[in-house]
Image 1: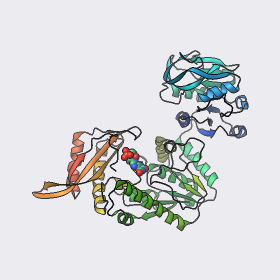
Image 2: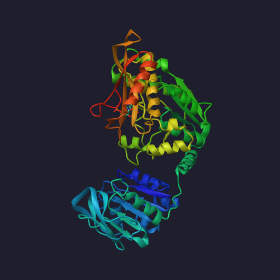
Image 3: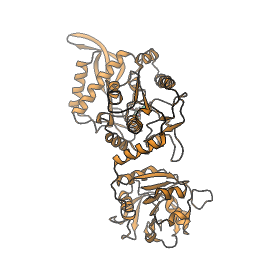
Image 4: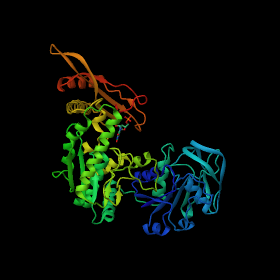
Length: 511
Ligand code: XMP
């Protein structure tokens, strides 16, 4: 176990992730965590993260000097490095020149254990306004930059390492190597931890936390809530109840697929409640064309249904959520605060659900790690590698009024599109792709007959963060095949468009 002590920096989770990438187990704790608790966990190493404060100011986060006297290796990063120097008698000051961005770092001590195999100079990511002006007694400078005399320092005998830059950020070209060096060469971690261990450990900790209590989870069938359901089921079996609301706006056969995995004939032990609310939704959405109003109705209706089910179940001890780390970041919340997923798939939390505490087993993981955990749990690949799907579902991929017939059209067209993308081997390389139903009808001819039917729009985008996106370049033959299959197989469609718009100015979805 390596402990990451969180001092409020923006890259803390990345530090943890890099450590896990070295196959070393790691947990993040607040800097407020008592030293006795840390000692009791008997970690092989401790990493102090960056943070926004100045360590020499009175009310800034700090830590007792004793931490550095335990004989446990400590790596301080940025604020953590400054704090280590400050607490141990060095001097930290406001720098004349603020360093920000990619910076050339010259390694002065190539024999340092953390810099083993690292080239000099090496490009590192800097972001600081304070600097270590004077290293603490017993420390030796191991790297510098043009503007910063102490880019790294160490007291190798005491296994204390201070690094001013951010090795956890990928812009630091050899950063992963440095973190690997610290955990393997200095902490002497074996590096045999894998995702199966995360799964086992999480199952254990869920058991300890939940005890004999009851847990309720809203299962959407998306990757995150599915993996959360899998973990909870393995931990506490029938103490878990999952409510799956089929709002009739899912992709083709998706409701049945979710039921197949988590329902009574599936591989997981839990109480599975499927609410077939298709009619209820179509009735609510009849005649509604304004996109925001549609979204609101879909979200609110979900909450009402979930509340109704929760009332039937009665009081539960925990409400589980599939919150993953990027949701925490997007909600603008850092390490220590308790978070309710504000980026919830369906637009908010129910007002009335009688529970005592939230449980979020995936809170520290990134999407690809969640997927790995899902595979580890035996959740089918089809579900684990599902693309992002918006909470309001096909409701925002049908422009204008939603009707049962339009849902059928878009489901069938989308299923063909997905099948052909997979046949072309493109399904894992395109960020997100789907069919949408425009609200436009036009004249066509089919088998000598005049048609007056709908136009389907195909969308496919590549994106890093879903904030910006480019239309994907799908080979023409693939698009052509999709077009011809949709026209031939989906009744009610006589035209197919490919949407070339990037985001901005477009959005990925249509409403
Ligand atoms: P836009 O259309 O805003 O979509 O460019 C960006 C990404 O967000 C997804 N999306 C949603 N996801 N609830 C969600 O959970 C929503 O209401 C929602 N709206 C859009 C969209 O699929 C894309 O991946």
